[in-house]
Length: 257
Length: 276
Image 1: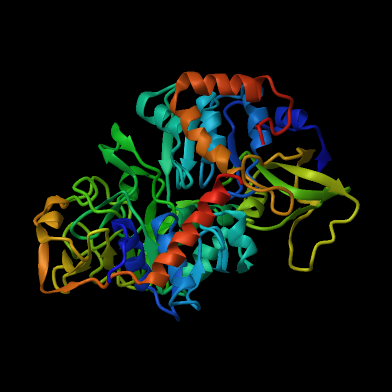
Image 2: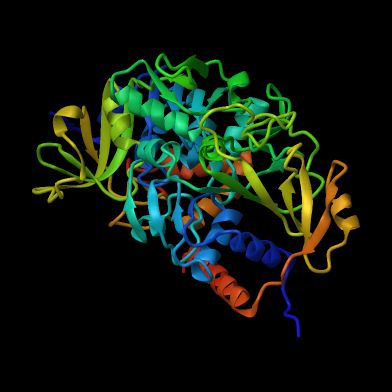
């Protein structure tokens, strides 16, 4: 008998499963943080989570609203200054995975969190780069998670805040001391990976019940599908229970109760 | 040694119109009480530096204090946009502001370089990013030893830095605990510095490796109880996450914002002001 779950839960569980014990993960706020903590509370209790506020090896009981909530510091092995975090731990090569969200992503997995429209007179001003530009190049590899829609999956981002593989897919070629870049993108519909040659994102796994047409409809470029298209495994009962409890705890906490 | 001043007098003495000001605190220990005092004293044409402008700069921008903002992530954490920042950038209300944006890594390095007395910071950064196209303060240099291309940004050296901390002793030595962000770097990088504290104590009781800023490296200490609300002070009070969420509706609307400013800043005593 199969379980009831939402597309968002499917996305979070699939993103969580990308993390394993032994990884050191630099965690972005929002969806990545939800997935990373679900991984820690289920199959990967020893995954090391670090946040840009300087909190190293942290085990929050509720999901932080901001990147520097007290919960992150109180449950961390240690807390270092922000310059130390970026210089020693990230730039120094101690982070195996960067886990990021984004407002816009393109076919070469470049990320835009700066603005929609033209820089001088933006249609929509977004928050900006934050830690992402250096997380994406200094971490060993990058996982990205966001909801799938035509508005977010665009052929070319309006602005490259954070490098995927550049405007032509060759942005990392012959750059010394750079990470592998995005290795998977997890959405509420599917999992994508960059083509080994061209670096263009290709759908490699469909979530249960999702059709190719749905993905084509929600992507602004002519999306390709892998020859060996897989079916993403469904969430199990424990993952759903832990995720729902985590979210309920978090909601109660942030409501100030 | 630091002078013990009222918050009013500290801001009046060290924050001049046109100054370059860094009010730091990475999500934690954000010096809101001092920010409100700057608004009440109607300081103008400030260049405001902060990694995450947060609500504090949203309020200063909306109140018309800023001419330029240098930052690396301008959102309301976990909630959405900073609507006063956006309104100023997109529509020029209440005045047009210039923005200069970096990444966190670059700004953290720039504060550190400022504290170290260097003119620039060097980092392995901005690779493939288009931020260097829109910020002429981001350059690239070749390492003279390896030839590797590295990013360079000017160090941050504010006229005045303002930070909040848990406590000071009677000699003005300050203890900062929890998420320490770039506060120490901000103080050491600046010509002048104001540190607001929750309380003055006889003994700091700091552990050997604690983050302590000596009183002789600080210009002024001012007591501001609950001076970081709606952000938080580790060991004293929690972040008011509910207010961060409520801010979205207040800041979205110019009228609602102006009313909020009247009730909570202009007509409030020089303490935190927020409904905590």
